[in-house]
Image (cartoon, rainbow, N blue to C red; front, side):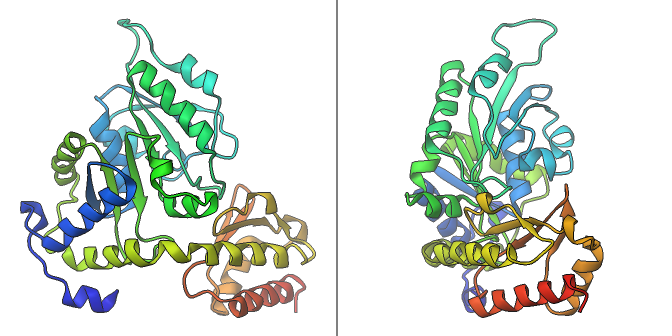
Length: 327
């Protein structure tokens, strides 16, 4: 990727004349089965740009209360798009179909905001992959009431690998999709927002408004092209490593692993029963060359990725065992 970035032919993407960005966007649109795509700096940027483009200010977005937009995007929807988030109780990334339909504002009323968007997530940020049947049903509700559906597909290719399907089998059930190049696909920077041509045309101007108009962005896009062409085919290895890591961690006294949620490359676990402080543990792990997230809602997280080997996992597990045992 670094070599490709050095060799990249670049222009000014704000003026639409960076050939490498164009190549990336055209490739991305083909891969996810949409008319057009737009390169953006990050997944959060892409999600918020989607809300900003789909919705009128003061309208309402229906989504799960455990999704990334609600939990980890700093309340940006209220600041950027000026929308109201109407959350539904989520269970491992899915939420009630009947409640979606109940919450849609079906009649014009001076007191009501309009329902502007339904948002779903696959793979879910808790590690689960959402069923295509549920996505199809959500999309059907959107079509019935003429409400667009946006898919936060930050780990879209992980979901496709788990389901053993082409990514287009997932994205057929949404009007727009954001996916990251910088997670399992290993590019250093960037995400894509894809959808209909008219949607992307409007999003392009709003991207500029949000400060996402980049100049010689082809240096970044070159890595993104390799990410899309080369990296999806090896994600199964990351998933297998995550399962191995979860199995090994579960054997350590004091660790409870959410084994049923290991469907992609993330392992969530609790050390509550060990009596150890998670912040202290994270610091000790870092001293030993291991990066981990501290606990959120009582759970810590490890993520497997390109370059992580079985030997690396054994080292992590042995280190965890020794640290929790106080040795």
